[in-house]
Amino acid sequence: MASVLVSESDPDVRRLLAVLLTRLGHEAIVLGGGFDMPPPADLLLLEPASADCLEQAWLVRLYNPTIPVVCVSVLPEEAHFLTLGPLGYLTKPFTLDQLQGVLDRALAPALSA
Image (cartoon, rainbow, N blue to C red):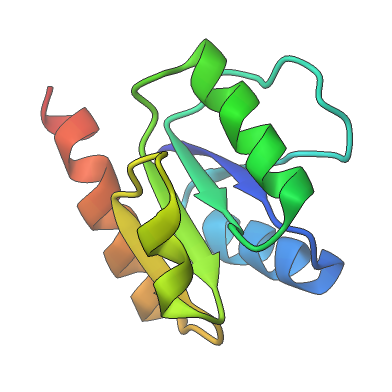
């Protein structure tokens, strides 16, 4: 089980990700609108199109510089401009199997260490 930070601007997608992550056996930690110190986690799911989400991502990386990042977006090219070093990409809409696959790939280095 991994703890996963969710930084997504759409409340419906946030809820969906939280439910799916829980169904897959992970702990979903939905980040709020503030920029407080984020809790420790194993992975960050990030919507790169939202300025608030990018700010949250920088804060997460400030406290945990090695946290894997998976981008969740409708536009695949959005992951290419990030300097956060995304380890995965999930295009909306996505399936439970696609989410599981991207999580497995992004968490594999951390779990094998």
